[in-house]
Amino acid sequence: MLLKKIKKLKEELGVEGTWDKKTTQSTFQGDGYSVYFTLSSYWSGGYNASIKIENTGNTTIENWNLGLTI
Image (spheres, rainbow, N blue to C red):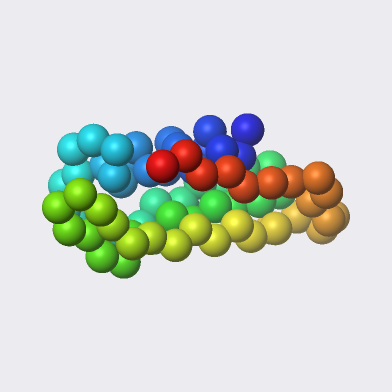
């Protein structure tokens, strides 16, 4: 589920399609967590970005993972 959220964020930024060359950050807020995707640089054929996952709830998030498809 988290991987789908990250993919959605990437699509919103346009790193997997048309990008407006203005948006550099997108945030998704889920139930007890937030995911931040920040684009730091880009060039023809690639980009540098960071992904921050933050627990915004009161309980530990267990058994989570992060996957990346390039």
